[in-house]
Length: 533
Image 1 (cartoon, helix red, strand yellow):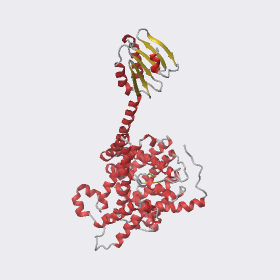
Image 2 (cartoon, rainbow, N blue to C red; image 1 turned 180 degrees about the horizontal axis):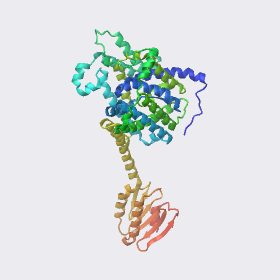
Image 3 (spheres, rainbow, N blue to C red; image 1 turned 45 degrees about the horizontal axis):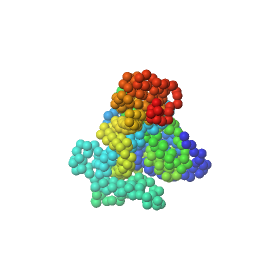
């Protein structure tokens, strides 16, 4: 385990960097929290509450200095399915249960669980989520509700299409794309977060563009929060809007399915994000993964109890924290405080944000998850990578997230088994001398190949079976070998075993076992040993 001796420095130094970094993360988080809630079919306030809990609760428990938690695009598909199946109350209860599971994962020290899922499967899962995100947000980019599009595309276009919404969404999307360019990133304006600038530009254009040119946006094409007061009155309204989970939903089996799905995916995404953040930490610090699982568990437990979406550690906000110069957990705490203040004290100001520009933010997020470069990269690694990647992607889009991931793991296991199967045995033949070498552990999967090789032996053949490199030989394989050896003398076949089942022995064509030794040092050259016998 790598541990750095570097430190963040004195408090006065970190404050100067953590406070501005926290503000930057806050500005990035607002459109993402709102957009993810919108994409999930949940109330916008639920996304903001999840961001607040991630910033205040998870940060306080986590051992990571730079990781930021909140609602994640990777859970959108799960949340949409859960709300459709068990309702929003059921989702909250599933989030609470998922938090309990994550706490158990942490205490069981399962923080390394991410290492057991192939990277091709993980990337296929994220790519599938990204494509679903893009497909679902394109109608919203043009001012149309997804539910209306599902019912009738032609009716939705006729009744809800908005040239103004499309213009605002495209302007936001162009800004987001430009802000990814290297020449922008290196310029002074590149320090402004792209999502923030995209939202501000869309709001400004919406205000400046006269309705005589393009019809104004309707109420359903803007953010809508259940808080219409500023200041202290808004704080009281915010407290009233906190929603408890529906405990009666515990009787629905779908709640437990959703909870398991959320716990597994949220844990996996959090651990992957944690590894990614540690790699870009300028101070090269190592974050404890088991503790992070506990922190995420506490966060989801609290978020579900107060009406928030499921939470994970998120790479977009975490990387923004690193790039903005964050040094300690204070930057994430600052972002959580600012989110709470913006929602509780000045929520009406957020309602000027057009949904189209949030859709643009999510379209770009989805594109990053499923970029063409990712497909090219997996293809270049060959079938072992591209097949599980594509199987997972198609499974996530056609079935659901868990089934897609399981299909991807099965595809990856196929290549693992196939590779080990092909590498397990090597056969070398010179005249009537046959060398069968076990190059790695031998299992029942190699039984048919070994049997076919032995069945081809004829009278006068000399066979060496070399087990020096196999730490494990399946009992079924051992039984087949010993049965062949005992029948070999009557068939006129000589067999030499080298460290098979801990034994080296020679079976002759007329006298059975010629020589046998237990634990003896095997000959280095099996073929020459037979030739000289």
